[in-house]
Every structure is written in structure tokens, then in C-alpha cells.
Length: 619
Image 1 (cartoon, rainbow, N blue to C red):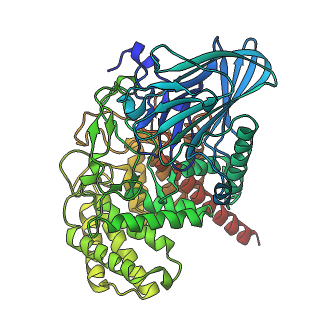
Image 2 (cartoon, rainbow, N blue to C red):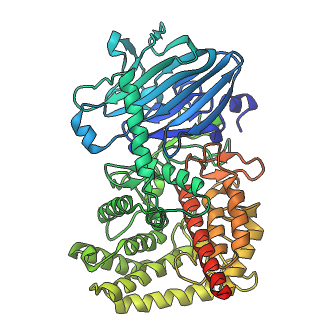
Image 3 (cartoon, rainbow, N blue to C red):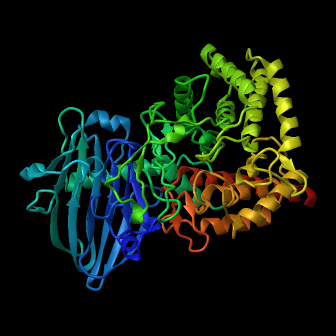
């Protein structure tokens, strides 16, 4: 376990905020330290990784020299982060963003491939700030050598490209040429700009600073506000829904349409533990939930791009589906460890790549087919290749659903017969039958009907334990699992059915903690020692399940409690410590934010139905 000394060198995970441009993301602490950045893409080697090694990882920090208090927010309806430092002698605002703009604008002007803007503005009095810049390319495996090129800025070769830092204040390069720093005083009304850019293709573009940088900031904010204005949701908790939507957008990889699970790797599920995974890839288990969130808020274009990536990536391994793929659909994301990094607060190993890509998870077949079915609008959606793809998926499910698998949670123990996986096999066949009946697709529906019905018989006979009154994690088992709360979501069973109502009660009793929800029982053999936080999305699944079952008041109360676990700028991690409220695991987590959106959509739908019934009764 890490010592107190060691842990104190790291900002709490909940103290981070993110900025991004739909290609990569940066984590910035409450104290103004940019501690994580991979360029040029989500899964590229890091440029700064202080979040994984406070000494060796590298950072780009801007903070007052003396004591201060920080307040943060995102500028309304944008992903521009504003941190206001309040020091005894005055206050100063720091705005951080990755500029984004329209494709038309990109064609009109020469712009940097990748850029971070950090704009400092004096608010009151006069504040002394310390700026410190220490890039550590390639996960700190490459020696950084800084070169001052005058007005062209401070350059650093990364091995694959070049970093250029331009400032309107001169930074002094340290004697070892591995870092640069300066102390400045900022008066009220004074503004200073820093532009960090990266180029790996063709000649480097060094962005202008000063007024030109201010224009990029304003254009970026306008772009985000225009994008957010497309949101059709007008229900309760709109602010939280929109922030989750904006966070989800940051995890979209624009060139391919993929959505990463999280933009970080190896943030621990238990401080000092070994459950540290690389989440900078795309998991098929998220597909149906993500598409419902996007389409439910009116973002059909993003949903179509994601579905397009889904069809492309899965065809590369068809008829077998992997559980995760790279952002371009890569099938191999080999896992390795970075032994030279100590890990967040001493939590090692630090992993890159993810060995779970080779696991057999049968639930992904249901996720993929359900996602495609959600996007279908007409017969024209299905060309010959897509029909053959779907038919092959159905035949694979028929052949394999009786086999054990690794399940939704990817334990590194022996495969088992997971109830959730069997139900998702049912979902795959059920949706294929629906697609045949709705659009006349030429599918092997007779076999699909036979196997679908056989799956239901097996699940109802062996996946429900009458003695404890609950569906169980595995067939013929007694262990509980929060994934069982999604059965109504997929239309397998009505949320008001006695078996689901009883399951919700038992799962809540055993896995619930004040609205939060653990994934499964402590005695579950997942290949590791026990110990992790409550899993963020599972609490929102319980809210969704309650709301669908008509328990709107309790569901609403739980939803509001769960929203309280977001940080001050509305972001959620993968997991939450029920005792302290601390964030655990990779951050921010797309699945948790998708859970926020979908639970809000279900609550809003339930409230509308209740209001409609009340109006009818009163009439």
C-alpha cells in the first residue's frame, strides 16, 4: 500500500477536470497542473503523466506562488475550463481549452493539428504566478531536450513529432534542458497567453498568440455552444445531463466515430491495488446504452458515426466479436506494463494496452445487434453486407450461447455461465427476429426463434434462485450482480415483474450503499484480491430499473443522491468510494456519464406518463 507521504503528492482524482478536442484529452488539477496528455490521439504515448508518477511523469503547471483557494467551472455549454485562483493579494483566472472549430474554418486557414490554449487574466489586485513546463514524451521513456527558438517558441522533439510552446512571457530553460519555468506577476486586467501545439505530419504550424489566440478561444466556445444547442432534452436535471453529454462528446474520436471508455490508463480501482487498466479503447458492451443516450438527446449524427464505427470494427473480426477495439477498429491492443512509472499514489502496475481484448464475452453480441436495431429507420439501412453480417452474428450466438464466457466485468479467472451473458444472447436473437419481421431481412429466423426460446427456458430455470428471490450472477448460483438490473432495459422482462422487483430488492440490500452500487458480491472470484469502489453506472442502472417499475419517487431520490458524487465541475469517475465519496478508477468514465443521461431520460419519460395519467383522471 502507498504511504501517506506518497499519496499526498497526488491530487485526488476528483480534483481533475478535462479539456479536449474529440481526438485527445488533457487532465488538469484544481491547482492548475496539466498532469495527463496523450498526443496526437487518445491511445498515443503520453506527453505529461504526472498523474501516474508525480516525480517522473512530467507536467505543465500554472499556479500562484503562495497560498490560494481555487474555484472552477466550465464556461456555460462549453468544454472550456475556467479556474479562478484567490490569493491574499488578489485573484487571477486561468482558462484552459483545446481549440475546436468548423471544418469550413479549417479549410480557410492554416491551423495547428493539435493545440492547448492556457489564457491567464488578472481579475483583482496583483498575483504572483509560477509557470513550470516539463514535457516527458513517450510515457517518460524518452529524454526531453528543450530548445529555445526565440519567437517560434520552446521546441521539444518527441520522437514522432514536435511540441512547440509559445508564450508572451519568456520562459527560462533549466540547465538540464528538460524543463522551463518563470515567475510572473499578473495585475487586474492584464492577460497572458500560452499555446502548446503538436505536429507529426508535414511542417509544424506554430499558432499565433495574443489577439489571435483570443479569437480561437471565442470561436471554440461558439462551436461548443452551437453543438450543445442541438440538445433536445428539456426534462429535469438538464444541467447534469448536458454536462454528461459534453463529457461524452470529449470521449468521441471524431476521425472514426469511436467512443473511448475513458481517456486515461491505470487510475486504480483501489489505492495501492492492482486493478489498474487501460481504458483508452472502445468497448462493445457500451454500445446500446451509448446509442440510446445520443439519440435520446437528439444527436443522431454522432449516433450514426458511432454505429458506423461499430459495423466497421466488428467486421474486422467477424463472425467472432471482440469485447474491445482500438479507436480505428484495431483488433490487437497488446497489454504491457510500464515498470518505470510508480503508478497513481503508488498503485502499480501501470498498464498500456488491454489483454481483455482476447476474452470471450457473449454479451457483446446482444449489445451490437441491439445497437444496430436502434439505429434502423428503414429497409434501406441494410445493404447486403450488413444482412450477411447480422446473419453470421445470429449463427455464432446459436452455436456458442451454451458455452461459458468471461462476462461483462472481464474477470481474469476461469470462464463461467453468466446469466447476464445468456440474456444478451437472447437479446441478439430477439432483435434479429424483430428486424426480419419489420424490414423483411433474409435471416435464419426459424433457428433464431428456437434458440431464443431455449435461452429463456435456461435462464428462467437456472438463472433465477427462488430461495433468495433473485436472478443470480451465474446459472445455478447464489451470487448477486448489478448487471442483472439491466434485464428490463433490454426488454427481456418487465421491470414491474415480481422476479425483477425481488431482484432489485436483493441486489440493493447486498450491493447497495446509499444509492451507490457495487458490481458484485465480495466473494466473487475475479482473479484478484477483494477490494474496489462502487461502480458508477450500476447506481444509475438501479435508478433506471426502479423508474421503469413505477417507483419514481425512490428512483428520483436515489438519482439526486448519485448526482452529488460528481466533482465540482460535474464529472464522474469509473468508481466511487462509498465511505469517503472519493473517485476511483479511470476518469472521466463514459459509461457513468451515459448512465446519468439514460437514467434522466427514463425518469423524464416516467414523469411525463404519470402527469398524463393524472391529467386524464382529472379530466
